[in-house]
Image (cartoon, rainbow, N blue to C red; front, side, top):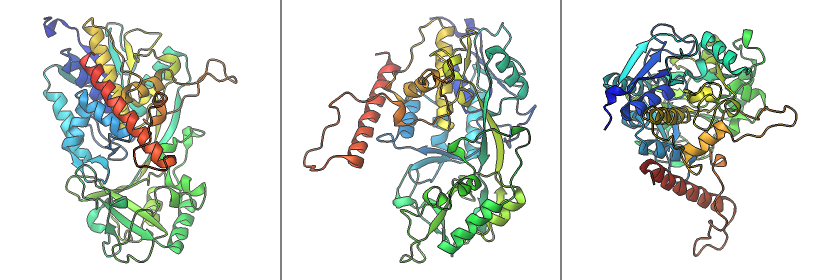
Length: 470
């Protein structure tokens, strides 16, 4: 067996979710890794701490249902692959209905501690302002959506591509003891019980029609942060500011983050709310709750005034108000090969949100793959891609090639940030979906559920085979 000390280190730039996971996978394969993180030396516009894998937006890893939800499937596959991010999320989960949500500080502290304690991982606090030097023969850039301007410019110069950017907004966090529970009540939508939950994991604030309309008017009229040099930068729909949604149509929010379906007011069960604002537990102590889907670019003064119009939040005290930052990603289908390596520079991989995936677990999963691929290359082993039928493989395929070249712009591809979803998975074999015995009508929603279940079970079986080398 080759002694691990004979391996030169692999360098990972960026200590977010993707970089942390990549470093862990490399070290777990017996290869030394140097993890470079600039926070602690240079802050970003969105992070609060210098902790590794800090969550700057929601504290939710979304659905943990591995039987019929694509996000839950990728959770399960990452756990099978020994993911540090998932292990720390599981240890720091807080109640969130059918979702996996975490105590954000406890989660980051757990990741930071694990990486610092691993004997093959060295964490260096420094800014890497350009592409890795040539003597870093294997490196991973996982600097995320807040890549520093100097490094972004170096990447752009190397690739010859215009970098893409979009705005990302952060939701406010409220002190639990400032919420009026004589108006609000605890309930998960449809009383759904999730990991660590009870079916009563959200605080719900009801609005009648007049209150809803007044709130919408205030949102639309609210004073927002200016675009400045970011003028013309688009939003990503998965993190759209609430005031932008309100401006798209008066009923938009009532059919989005403020939908009342599946909720019954415990104080007045016979009266159906016109709209409902939900708050989700943000820390293990249960002292902080974040406003679900309420990412915003309203100015701080406007935020406090407008959000206190919500019944139950009239005396709300905010631990953090919402904010705005810019995300950046590269044209991965054009620039990267199937193993996430930059085509113009062998040995240099990209991982995480900078590749054009969207979401915490998606970013971490691409870090997981980049780390495993780099470790295999260092050890002289073949780089084996996950099957396309797995969640990991389908997301990798989306990033590195699953896009059409347009007639209008030859050579360009229709590439946008994407969460994992069943639309990225290959179709089932014809005849796979069979009507259950005793069921007379089998179509629509019932058939779709069975299809998702089959895709999920196929994915997990294929992932196990991939990990065991079968």
